[in-house]
Image (cartoon, rainbow, N blue to C red; front, top):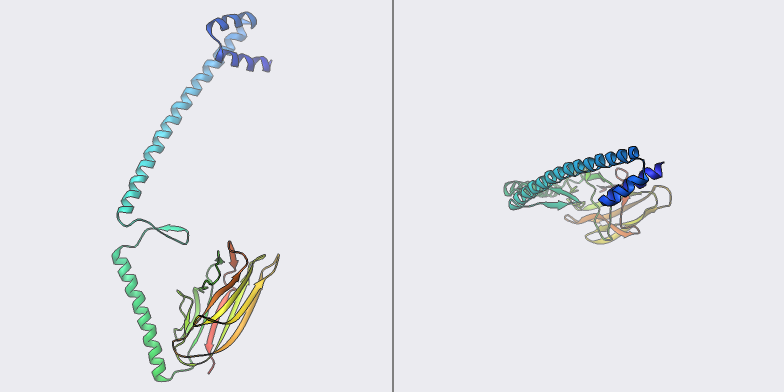
Length: 254
């Protein structure tokens, strides 16, 4: 019975008037009328759905046009800027000027502090300790690692924006680096003084997180730079270093 019902619906949808008259002789009149009514209802429902969808399409087209207009206005005022894979509105000239002035003031404050330390002969208040604030991902060889979260920074030698320690006073310094790699990730890092490698550390093992550490003692002159770089990466995509546990620290020994 179901097959007859489906077949009849199909036939009704494609048959001519003559075909329908012929069909009446093959199917009982009550079944024929029921099928015809069912087909008419389906056609009416289909037309109503098309009408509703057409209204939704027009609404979506209006929304797209409005969004395009908004984007055009934003672009005319400076456009978008993309950073770290996220979209953000650009700073206006006033905000940019204030940001530059703030950075300049911070640099001048640090340089002035270091100058005063050198003049006073202060040698006991230089130390820093910082860690990653987020997992280190999508690394490239030679890339500097920035430990953004600063826990200690006596002497203001370490910069959380560049990841570089700038020596404020001459002396012997101790530096420690600990890296914690995520499971199945391998990474080798280097400690560099003025762009020259002075130490390397490796971490990585299958199925588990792993850690590697190194401690280096260096003689530094005022103005020397020390920071951590990616020496060799075995995976270029995805998270490599775990935050919090990956740290960089140093202090003036004597």
